[in-house]
Image (cartoon, rainbow, N blue to C red; front, side, top):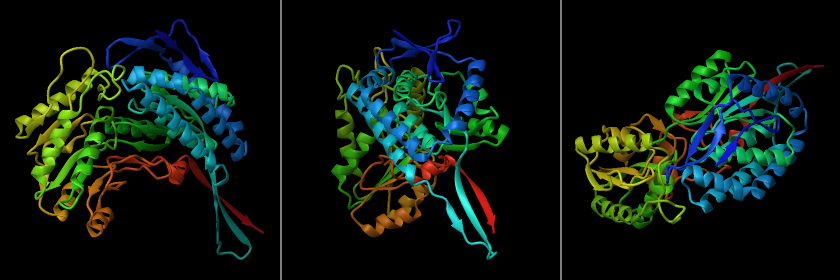
Length: 474
C-alpha cells in the first residue's frame, strides 16, 4: 500500500503527524493506498507559495509558459502507466481506459500550450483623436482547482493547463475518492521541471479546502462537481469576491424522433448510460421517444441493457465497473425504488447485487412522468428513465422543463427538426445524432443550475484571465 504526501513547491512534503486518508478500490472495497491530509497551516503555506511563484510565472512570455506545458505533456505520456495504474485502482476503471485518460490529459495540455501566441487583447476606438484604448488580457493570480472523482486525471489538466498558459499558478484539491492519480501527475510536474510553486497538489478535508478557497490571495475558484458543492463555492467566493467557474449537475435529455436510426440511437444511449457506470456529467439521463416508435425503441434498450454485464474490470475490461462508493449506490437504489412506488415500470435491473464492490446493474425504467424525481434529479449512475411524446414541439418543451441545462441530444434525419431543437434547447451543448463527448476545442458550459463559466477551447482558456484597459493619451 502506497502513501502519497502533499506536493508543495515541487516537493512531496512528508509529515509524520499528518492524518492519513485511506483510498479504496470501489470494485473490491480494499484499501489500495493512503494520502496525507493537509493541515490548515499546509493549506495557507501552499497558497502563499503559489502567490509568490505567480509573480515570476506571469512575467515569462506566453511562449515560454507554452514550452513548459509541452514538457509537462511529454512527462504525462512518459508516466501514463503509473498514472493509469493509480487511477484504475482508485476508480474501478479498466487499466487501458485509465491509461488512455492520462494520454488524453496530455493532449489537452498540448492544446492549451498552443494558445501561447493566440491570447489576444483589443484595440478600441476612442472618442478622442489623440488617444488609444488598449484592452489587455491578464492572469488572475492563484487559482484553486477542485477536481471531481469521475475523470480526475483529465479534469485536473483541463483546469490547470489553461490556468498556467494564461499566467496563473494553482493549488489543486483532488477528490478524496481518487487522489492517488493526482499525486502521480504531480510527479510529472516535478519531472517536467516547472518552476517551484506553480503547481501545488494537496489532499484536504472540507474545512481545509475552505481555508484555501477563502484565502485572500486566491483570485479564482474552479470546480467540477454537484450543485450543492457549487453553492458552497459561491459562499467561499463571497469572502474575497473571487471569480468562480462552475460545472455542476447535468440531466442530459435525448430526444428520439420517429425517423431516427433507432439501432444507432439505442446503442449510443446505452453506452453513454453505462460508461463508467453512468458517472459522467453529460451522460444521457432521460430519454424522450416519439410515440410511433416507443415500443420498438424500448425493446432495443431493454435487450441492450440485459446484455450489459457488470463486474470488476480488472478481471474483464468489457464489464461495466462500479459506482464510486456505497453511499452513492444506496442513494441511487433508493431513487429507483421511489420511482417504482410512484408508478414507473422496472424493465431491467433495479437491485443491489450480492458480494464485494459497489456495483449496480444497468437499470431501465418506463412509464415515467415528467414530474417524477427520477426525471427531475441527477442520477449519476446506470439508470435510465424513458418517456413518450407526441411531436417534436412537445419533446422540446419536456426537455426544457428542467432545472439543468448542461448537454442535450437529438436523433433525427430531418434537418428542420434538428435545427429547431438546436436553436431552442435550453442547454449549453446539443449533440445531433450522437451522444456527448466534450471536444476540448469547443466550450463546455452549462445553463441554469448546471453552472457558471465553462471549460475548453478559447472561451474556457479566457475564463482564467481578467482585463485591464490602458487609456493612452498622446
